[in-house]
Image 1: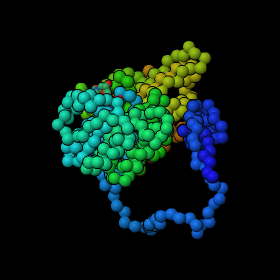
Image 2: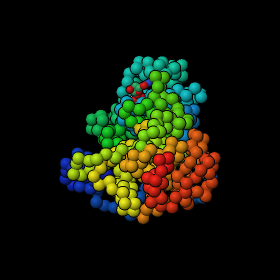
Image 3: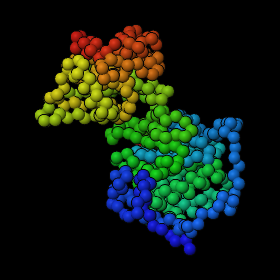
Image 4: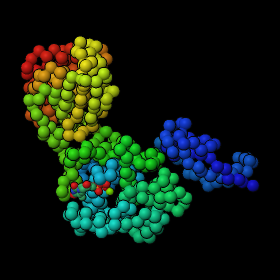
Length: 460
Ligand code: TYD
Ligand code: MG
């Protein structure tokens, strides 16, 4: 007789233990271990010839490759991040902190897709239909033929969707409010969220509808509760923005059908999210040319060049261990740049607090920002402002040498387009040519950069 067995499964990493634990020994997560029943085994394993199952159609690896059919939504910045539109039969997760604008973005996407003649369903588990209608009215989208419901039961949602003509695009706002009767735990728990998401993803794969799940992300950047949803879906987009800024950045952290390094830039206005197709101009708009410690970094986000301002402040420290505070960049990377400046160029930051900020609420992950960061630090320390006409890019190695980075020509062209005249870059990147700038300052190592800034009032 088969007997159900109990096992304890960590909902974060999937580790299995035989007794309950408050903290998972495998991944260190607290309160993630949940009791699960597993079906009993008879103990008798049937021989191969006795196994009865459906015969699967095996296919050769080499075959006709079909482009995944896509549904562009008409919002250029969103289509850029998804890789050209939503893919039919796929599931997408849009994560972001509460209030960042996920519902607004998706309502706008629903309306533009519906206006292209597709069947679109927007299901809100958080707001009443009247609230969604009011928002659509405010955004000027009330006339779009979007079908609307306020519902949280997965069974009811799937039955409703299956009853009518097949929808092309379904938004479920949010995955945390969904619940299914097939899972026993209460709504909002990891088990419920996972089971509900699984049911909706299965629906998408079977019918060919594209579904979009909205997920709230907690302050520490995790999709609240279930990281487990992230690996079930085809793409994960995160919507981010700094408090106090109107800019919103949509980033793909996973995409089975497209790039993961493209970003979409939006601005939250009174009339909803508007696209920013020229983000460099926006991120440089509040720049103060006379302040020491400000350097313009010529960066790349995917295929698009993006110029932004890096600000540094170096102040005498009253603390035993000076403060190193970074917003928008990697703090380990800052520590490395400081160490190289100290070790190779003889600059002392030991008794100084250092603050580094990427203006506009942008987050940069490129090592190519090293030179811009070093220039901002040296400028802040020496009190000499850098020339407002220069851009910086290039990676710093531990030896103090400057390493070339990808796509120098695109960076230089963007700088020229925005009226910059000079670029400070690694010598090995200078082969790209001036690309419209009047001066290139190719440098071999960090010492040359420091000498340039310290030696002149209008250098860098
Ligand atoms: P919302 O889309 O509800 O965020 P989320 O779904 O991520 O929780 O956006 C809420 C915020 O956006 C709210 O603070 C008001 C602001 N907002 C605008 O500034 N302009 C608008 O046109 C809309 C619809 C919202
Ligand atoms: Mg919302």
